[in-house]
Length: 332
Image (cartoon, rainbow, N blue to C red; front, side, top):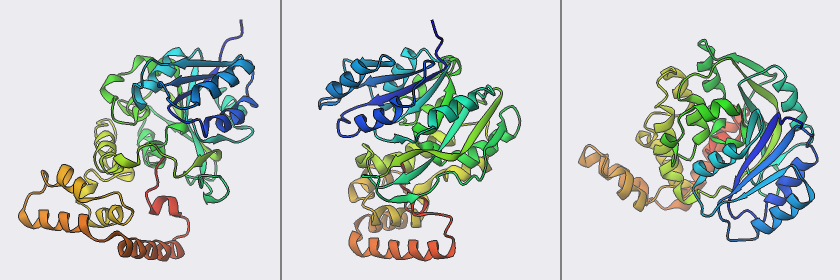
């Protein structure tokens, strides 16, 4: 029996419109030592029939139809548990692998890295316009010794991008050994597993963007404020073995205290009076602070959005390497 070197693990839910294109991009790159594991959280659309059609034509697809939607974190854990590979690539159900991506990762695995970050470019929903040529601004592959202070540099260099789970390749045995239930509900199980304590050995960040991210397709838009103001920073700042300077490169500890951040979220429709009442009013420490936080939450969106875009364009002219993706906090 041929041993499996790499399992491409996908958790999916109601992605009938996209998962077929994702799978077509992967299947053509499969070798005998690569499999695809799909955990479907009881999709109610045509996802099941689409995936089963692909599985019938490709023996290296393992499709798990779960009895109920367990949530993003739990469903990825189910996929990894079912995987047979030495390594797991935690890929997404609507993004695209470029030709040669699987071969590039397999080649990198020859050096026995324990953790690999695969770079990506970012395009609009129909993939016709490139919004950012590469998420991690590396000119060449970067190796990190995770048993030294270089682990801080890994977090600083890649942490913002790693909000995107599709970038992560990790040894399966390390995933299985580490605490996971603690991170259920965070939306970022992969970060909790990888950074809860230093990984052994070495990591690699691949400079070439082998992934194309389909921007504007996230399923958590309604939870944007809670995720980026609280869940994400709370998770990052819980990593006690990493330096504060590295964590600060990823996210402020309490981004909701930053007026410009709140104004931008209001401009993009991600901060409302309801968000203020639920999340910020209980945290405000003075009457003046409450008044200011509430005032931002009720500013008319249209003029604020126009102003935010003008500021973004001005900054882009001054620092073009930033990219719109970074300026507008577009996260997958």
